[in-house]
Structure formats: C-alpha cells, structure tokens
Length: 589
Ligand SMILES: NC(=O)NCCC(=O)O
Ligand SMILES: [Zn+2]
Ligand SMILES: [Zn+2]
Image 1 (cartoon, protein in one colour):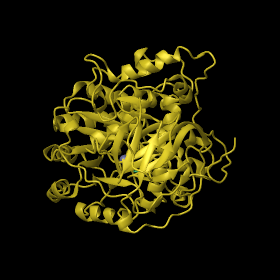
Image 2 (cartoon, helix red, strand yellow):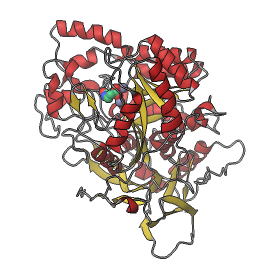
Image 3 (tube, rainbow, N blue to C red):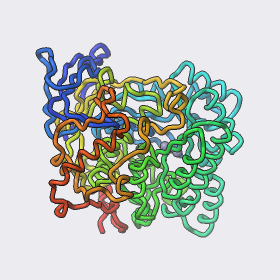
Image 4 (cartoon, helix red, strand yellow):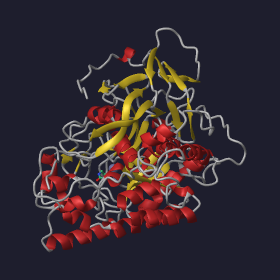
C-alpha cells in the first residue's frame, strides 16, 4: 500500500467537485441488497440504478464482483488523548487516515475533560485538535468525569449549541473519571431531560481498586494482573447496575466496549425487561483476539493488549461476541482505538495499573469483523452494514446522511472486495503505533476503494487521504430512533418482527456451511434481492421480512454449491504466549 503523505488541500478545494460512477457493483444496505450503479456528484449520492444518464468526464470505477457499502462509522475512538501520563500515538490525522484505509469514513471520538475542568473548554480543545487534521467526518461524545450543577448547565449548552447528543459516564477509573451511583443517576436523568443518550463504561471501579490492592500486595505486578483485577463478573455486575439505574432514571442507555459473554448476558436480560432502550457496543479487539495474550512472558506483547474492560481469557468469547452482534443482542462494533507505543506502555513495567489502557482497531475493525462474521456464515452482508455503520448512524442521529447508500446521502462509500486477501501487520498498517493486536491474522475481504465525501481516498489500494478533508458533524438531540415512535425498537429491527440472520433461521446453525464470503458472492445471482431499494423505498410485500428475504435468496442460490468442499473458516485468536517479542508484535512461539 502506497502511504505517501498527501499535501493538505486548500479549503476551497476541499468540497470535491468530482463526478464518480461506481458501476456493476452490488449495493448493500442494512435492509437489503441490489445490483445497481451509484452516481456521485459534489460529495453526495445523486443517482442509484441501471442505465443512468451521466455527464461526460465522469470517472468510472468498475465494481464487478464487489460490494458497494456505506462507509464504516466507528462510534468509539480516542485520538490525541492524554491519559495515565501518556499520549496516544494516533492523532486526528493519523487516526482518521488509518480509519479510511480500513473502510471507515466517520469516527465519533470522546472529549474527556479532567476532573473539575469545564466541559465547554475541553470540547473547544478537542475541536481545535481535530478540525484541521481529520481525513474524514467526525462527531464528538463528551465524558462526564465529575459532577456539579455547572456540569449540568454545560451539558445543556453542548446539546443546544454544539451538536453533542451523547455523554459517557465511567463506573471505573476510581478517583479519576468514576462517578458514584448517585451522580450516575443524576447524569442519566440529565441526559434524558436533554433527550441525549447516556453512555457508560461498565465495570465496578471499587471492586477493581480492592482487587488491585490485593494483587499488588501479593506480588502480582505484571500485565496478567490487569485481567485478574477485573474479571467478567466485575463487568457484568456494572452492566446490570447501569441498566437498573437507567431504568430508574427513565434514560435510554448505550453501553460502550462490552467485552465478555457475562456482560452480554446481563445486557440481554435488561433489554428484554426495560422500557427505555439499551444498546450494546462491542469492539474489534474482542472479536479479533483474546485475553490469553496477558500471559505472554514478553512485557511488550502483553502490555500492548491492555485495555479496559480487558480481553477475556475464555477462548470462546470472540465467536460469542460475533454471534451476539448477529442476533441483535449487541447492536454495534467500535474500535475504542486508543494506541500507545511501547515507550508509553512501559510506564507500567513494574505495576500493571500504570500501563496506559488502549489498543488499535480503527483500521482493522471492518476486515476483522468480515473475517470472523461474514466469512464464517454467522452474519450476512446486510447485518455487517448494520453493525459497522447503519446502527451507529441511527443511534447518534446521523441517519440517513450517513450509514446508507441512498440518493441524497453523503458519498461515504466503500467498494468492498470480498476476495482481497491480506495479512495484518504493524509493519504495513497505516497507524503510527508500533504494535498491532491482530498481527499475523490473514483476512479475506477488504476495501478496494474508499470514497470520503465524494473523493476517492483509497484508490485501488492506494491511500490518498487529505488532511483536513473531514468536517465536524453536529449530532442533534431527540433522536427519533431513541426518543421517537421507534423508541422501544432496536435500530436494526425497524419494520421487522424479529431480526433474521442465517444463524437465526436455523437456531444457531447457518442454513448452509457457508465458506468464505466470496463463495456467497459467487453463488448469488447478481440480481436484486428485492428487500428494499437503496433509496429506502420499501419494495417488500406486506408480511415479508427484509433480511429473511435477502438471506433466502442467498440460500437458494447456495443450493447449487458444493457445500461439502466449503471450509468453515475459524481463525484461532491471534498469537500465543512466548517469551520472544519481535518488532511489530511478531512474537514467536
Ligand atoms: N478502553 C481503554 O482501555 N482505553 C480508553 C478509555 C476508555 O474507553 O475507557
Ligand atoms: Zn471506557
Ligand atoms: Zn474508549
């Protein structure tokens, strides 16, 4: 991949006048697929269909055999963040460059004020850090890291004047960002009053503090102590408590970075019992790797995997998280990209509590999920779009500007090649961080072209991002999918009785032993699956279910495929323990 830096373009050239036709691809939205050409002008999707009348001089991209999907929306990044005495390696330029390389065209970062700091001041600082650097559009959540009446006033201002509709509260990071239950409830009530969305980091900070004392006291100082101080139960308890508090506060709730089967179980129960909606986000990290890395004798390797909540040692976790995403027990996948170089991770060499928390993921989130979810037959491409972009657009009120291939939507588009093979490595990734937690993993399926606001920024594999091309997106409060008529429904299940995925149809077993996605694609007739048009006009008959319909058309075509020869791809979670750590995280056996 050619990563040559591209000079910043002057502001008057930033809105692309390019005309672009993406021809012969299969357009995939969260509720259906159809074969159609997509015509883009001035950064907006202008036409979708066949035999379009296009002005001369339009560039054409041939997407034969490719999927044309909405650009990814990563709802959880930390670029240019200072935490635990360290600064992240990826700033807003390098971070969004990595995002675009992987097919993500919108990120939502977190403003995290220090205790006692004005929220507005912190918000202004974040805008200053980001505005001239972002290579794609971005929005901001704001952390509520302390509480006072002044904080409440500033939340009101952020919503009314600055386009913030989501606030993150911490149940962990005791004495730093953590709120007690009383203040958590007041903050959630405030979110509800403002018709914003309360987000929580769900881990029991007091239990972590006590366990940490005991571990350090007994001589456990290495990275393995991180997971030991905060096991699954510590996460699941906080998930349940957050849901109870949100229910009492009558506040919709979004639980960020859910990392364990126990936490998902607690969420599933809460979602079935309470009226204000609860949404769950998981991470590329937990889908793509696991907590066995904390036992790696190489400090550099083990510390590189430290994030909170931690990766889980239970090796069945990654597939269970994919299944939860497919089943709508979880609604989105983010990255929580928060990268620290070895030098920063070494702050915790003699004490695991001082290892700066965070991992990469913004670049590989889409490919990792495709590999683990679509190539295994657990998820169909429509659900892939739902959890990687459409649901985030709906929940954060960016729909249908973002997260959809439709006329008048932003031209944030990925031409996805389901056959493209590559091996993930720190040596070739677009991040600046010196480690990649997915090192050595072979993935089939990646973006070939990434179009950001109408500009081709990944061009047949060549990365040509433009620093400052992105803009800040105001996210309005009172999101209809949360507070409107749709309040009690999941974003993905609108218009559906139940979410249907291949795995659901046969109660956990895919209809066919699907091999890799390109087999699906080969098997599919490249004709409309009749779910809905990409413009959102419903074409289904009354009583028909969108996804069932599209899945059924895949399954029917699959009858002609020799499923005996298809291989169910199960990538083992990356790397095993060893004492040797090579540059880029290539730890030997
Ligand atoms: N997750 C993590 O370890 N680092 C980023 C901060 C947070 O999201 O809690
Ligand atoms: Zn967090
Ligand atoms: Zn985070």
